[in-house]
Length: 210
Image 1: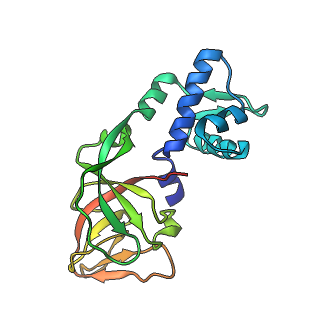
Image 2: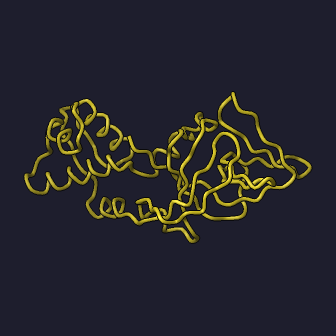
Image 3: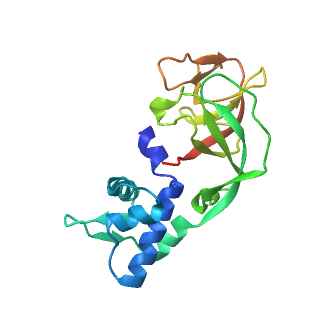
């Protein structure tokens, strides 16, 4: 499902901090910290918020929790590989609502898990604005990780440059007769049908600061 596709890819920065704290704490003391310890370390007031982030880490396969609340980490080598990150340029803002012009500014970088750089090709980031992709779990303000490519398969979420020069984030559909349908994931937004589309890249992941 789209939800699993996006949420399994990248850790939010606060989740990365939580995981790194767990690793350090367990290595030094031999047991896991309390929810109160975790909340204090990551800068949140409520242990329930720490519990939420632990649940996300468990969903993504970074930790396991027993019925008694005990926390166990996955293999350290695998964990280190998952946690390592690379600065990837944030090249602009992409509309998930109406087409807007992409901003070419590579002065800002985003820490992206190194697993995304395993595949050949250039990787860049864009910040999403608008709500047309909310049913694909892409929210206003999210950072998307994009692999630069000029072609796409049916059903992939792409960054598309339209004839008016605007860029938009939509699901790519090839229609009979050669036309292209760019599908939103919000019933309040209409699909865009075009004769030709200039694909700038394919979305391969998402980072959200929770």
